[in-house]
View 1 (cartoon, rainbow, N blue to C red):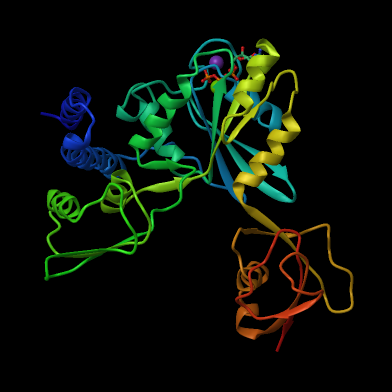
View 2 (cartoon, rainbow, N blue to C red):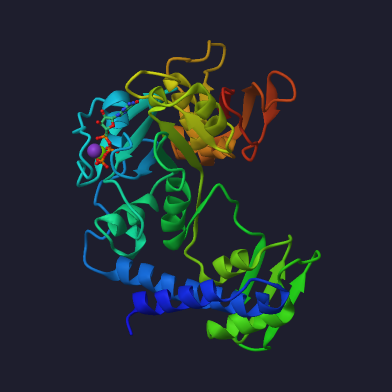
Length: 363
Ligand SMILES: Nc1nc2c(ncn2[C@@H]2O[C@H](COP(=O)(O)OP(=O)(O)OP(=O)(O)O)[C@@H](O)[C@H]2O)c(=O)[nH]1
Ligand SMILES: [K+]
Ligand SMILES: [Mg+2]
């Protein structure tokens, strides 16, 4: 039996099994098996011949991947926001390969990656779906484009396809440590009450994965899925913005309803509705910082900032300018949101905020 058939088998069994307290445990183990098979699918992919994901070189400060059903307007967006002219038509599967475009915003250069449309079953190799969802793993942000005039089932269907290749959307990494040991059996500890996880389940699931010696520490109330994710590994946690296009073609009441969903923005690319909000939202989801530098007794250079990731420290800023600065670093002066007073004298581990101004004093 092939991997896909085995997956289908387990999915059927899970669908047949009623969900209740008595079956929870059994279902959990089935989920574990399923995750294992899916992981095998991903692995075959990454060790397989070249071109499993689309081979587009990353460039700029970050990458945004456009994911969606055919004809939702992905290429229309690329053609609107970048200089790249992508073919647009009402015929499904117009785009057949990954097409990058360059978008500048707040001094950062963002690569927008237009991708072929995908449909249900993409992660299992239907159409070019497998390549598309593999490429999604390389993005910093997923822009999931949806057609506001079409069925609202598109959203959960696409989420399922991305989940299947190990992408977790708008979720943080579960606070679980798993240390594989060479002896001592399974030792399980939790710092808080668990609503789903039990010691018996943990040890059985680990046995399924041929792990017989390990230390597990769980620091928050997690789900069985979270635990499986940690055991399987190879998961990617990405921010995802859901963009409903073509709102020019639906009623204002419908627009209002959609706009209330989490992580969601409504636009019409062709009618230029809400597009500034979209640009701003993408920037927010990229979690980038812009920091300005200044020389001693001069004004800051606001024409050019450093682009850093959220959580970046003075050390990251130094590296961005020149790596020798890290070795020669004495202290820095910081003005802005991260400073307690202006300027604040800080060390190399100080965390920076968006729009901060920094002066580095070196030996
Ligand atoms: N009504 C309306 N139609 C739009 C809008 N944006 C794009 N379209 C139309 O949607 C159709 C599909 O656009 P594309 O950009 O080719 O869609 P795609 O998602 O790239 O499609 P594939 O490459 O086939 O996956 C075209 O006929 C566009 O004119 C919009 O804001 N409103
Ligand atoms: K199309
Ligand atoms: Mg297209």
